Image 1 (cartoon, rainbow, N blue to C red):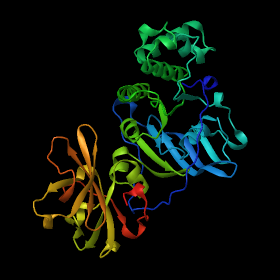
Image 2 (cartoon, rainbow, N blue to C red; image 1 turned 90 degrees about the vertical axis):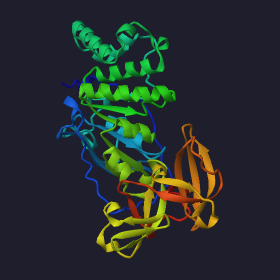
Image 3 (cartoon, helix red, strand yellow; image 1 turned 120 degrees about the horizontal axis):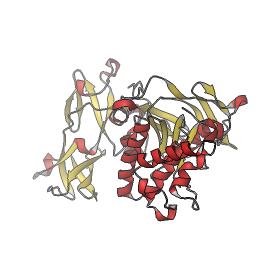
Length: 407
């Protein structure tokens, strides 16, 4: 049941960045949302549709030709760097901004254009990173804020239900300054869920929390959203957060969507170098396609291990995407046995990230446990030990001198 007259929304902002050239790998992801456990499984019904959405501020284009659909019960995350247009997209969905072109539809009804629907009438719940709780109201009163048009006994029952859902029954009479950051976030979430919105929007919901609490809260928030069955769109620049809480991820850059799909599919089979690099440490190993094999400086790989390598790429040069855990440093006694040199090492706590420069000039990143005996510098060999399919990109599409792509 939706109570569209009681949506609560607040302000945020988004900016653009310098444009990044996009390219395709030739791989395809249908973007279908995965099944989630139990009654929270995303359905086939589309709750939100964005069709060719556009937004500019003066001469600066922030969102350009963005199309996307979100199905009932799924959690979709807009992921991208600062200034890519993700927060502006969220504001367009909420009705806090009017699009310059395109259409926002909720449950098949147009919310924009000549039929622009005000934020409070859209049936949308919004949680922004500041939480924006009313300091003079208790947790219970904050949750009840959007239920003013309901009978008192119904409000009391709904608030009790939500405080139990977010595990704050004992803090109902506490004021925001008496609550921890995680508790404040749960109150903000409960307040947004109180009117039973058709869709829940979350803008960088964990960015104000410390690292340990951030990990704990994103697991809790996902569980709460799934238990209620509400459809949700989240916005973040944190790759780990997006991959861990989402049914699907939409990676954005320069006001456009680069790729949409299940988190594991987008990570393992990125459709552009930007997506590959943005989702984690990425190195690109040159290869030559020859019959049933691909020859690289790190050894010969079976062609079948290269994801979606089309027949027309026979006898061509490609780049293989490898992650640090795909490659191992092998110490050598004789420098003649080396294929490169360790030129950098970064301590990450339980692991070290090594930077190895190949004799051919390529730079490869490798991950090792902190207790492994790996040279800090000097000549080494590398071993490619990936036991999964590898993504690839046509060699001619490699950007020149762009650190984002490991070149």
